[in-house]
Image (cartoon, rainbow, N blue to C red; front, side):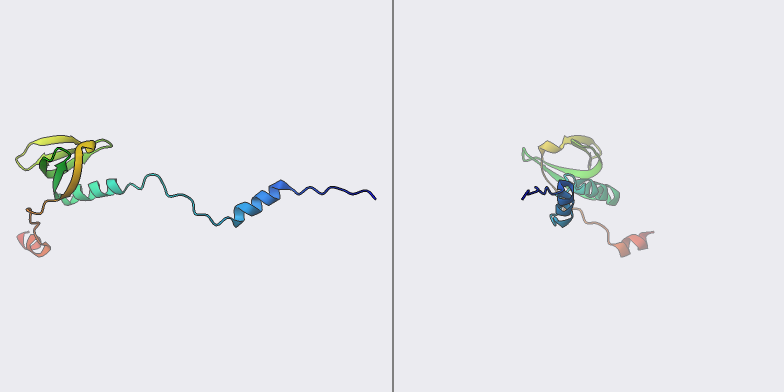
Amino acid sequence: MIRKLITPNLREIKQKSDKDSKHKPPPPYKTHAENYYYIKQMNNRTQLVLELVSGELLKGLLDWYDEKCLKIKKQDGGTLIVFKSQIKYIYKNPDFAEPRREEAEQAK
């Protein structure tokens, strides 16, 4: 009696395993959350406080940003370009009271 060796079709097995895998793809490397935050702060003209690694505090409006730095319009009228690597924290200025919507509408 002669026995025949049956070899499976490896392509079919691979296609089945690809369809059966239920693994989620890894998350994207860039979420662009930082960009959305900067755009929101620029559009709302939010007064920000930047605490630098050196401990110095800068207060002002975000004028523009790029991959490595931020341009800040200071309250006294000057402008600064600050490297992101030198920023420890960024938060809204608690001393700056934003006008309420009702007050802003009445002023118009």
